Length: 583
Image (cartoon, rainbow, N blue to C red; front, side, top):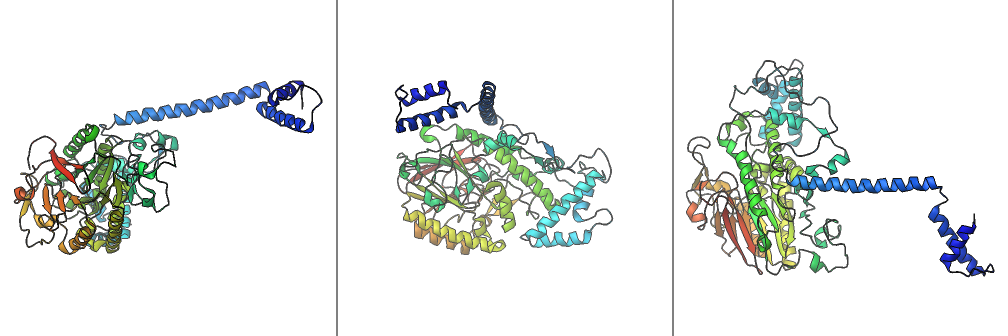
């Protein structure tokens, strides 16, 4: 409807003459403006317009309120890291049949062992489980057997607890930690709404950590944007829209870590063998406990966060053995691991992983975190099942990324130590390794660094077990009296080592870094490539060759600071956490 008011408004907006004699073009322009005016008020009544305005304002306030809540959660999460409880939010509900602590009942904790071994109420299938337990112990890479046995063991514990037929806190029958508390926490499977997830501390702390950073065989971290060729053209150069520049026309040399933009060089930190639970391996404990290891990692994180300006690292790499209790260690030195079943070791492993993440997510958000797997993470004989168990929590087990023109190749070299459990995965990684080395050389990387858990060698690349005949002893009182480990146990076997050494020499690897030895080693290959082993953030060992192998570095709990300079140049220093040397 054309009203006088709308006509006057349209005439005013179209700058047409007020005369009533309009040309066809002028009338067309007037009608266009009339449509604009009609759309502006939409023929809505005053009440309707007020309602629409209220809804728009409510939506706007809701968005602002959600943003404010998320900001508060992000701020609170930074101060919540000392909370030893499980990070997260209150769930909306739990699935039925979750574990309940029995108030009484007989049978003792021996009933747990009996249940695990197959002694269940009438109608059970003990014989089949005993056969599968034996099969699993003899062939740890049988994933289906592992899953079937593990699930039935958990079901039996549910049945026993619901019928209150044993006391889960009784551990008098054997000296092993009581896993009741951990079992209770693990069995409660919460359900979260999307709103709760977005407002959870874990969401903000882990947003760019662990499996949220290590995927597509590279490191996805906002402060270390990778070039597009890393993703084979499937992803844009930036991996985080909220953290990277939006200008797509910006030169890739400015926005990608493939190029050396920090002319003064850069720094990164190496840590190794945080190994939550290793102290418990050698000392009898009534309850699972790794407070000593937690405190060492907490102090390391605090020390790293305190570094400023040119001393601030781009990333921290933890070279394997993040935790101690990988479930296949049934024949380990610690007696409690021998008497525990796989499902119990899994419970402890999962709790150690939670605690590791809680502590190391305390790194300041501008410092990336790289996590490699060790033999205590995926087993002495890695399998597809054990590797998947680890990657579900931490992401890719091997990957590569650029940092200030330096190419960093991170390996699962536990597969080099014993490829028999997953020969196809070993071959796949070996092919990938050569491709990445060739790529780094073709793109003129200023340095090529290779990281892994196992040292490739302790003295030189051609050494054999017959040459390394010394031992490393544990601290007094840990484990059986006189506990020690042959030094040859800690290196990659010569046959698999030579495959890697040939590639490292061909493509000019600058240096290799590792852990596993629980003490420092500074060695060189025959062509001058350094092999640098970093001491632990847990229990230290002391080799008979300690002074010879360490290259004059102190041994103790600490971390390594690496400063990278011009092409092929770098310096490194091992820093003790408490300033004193001890074993």
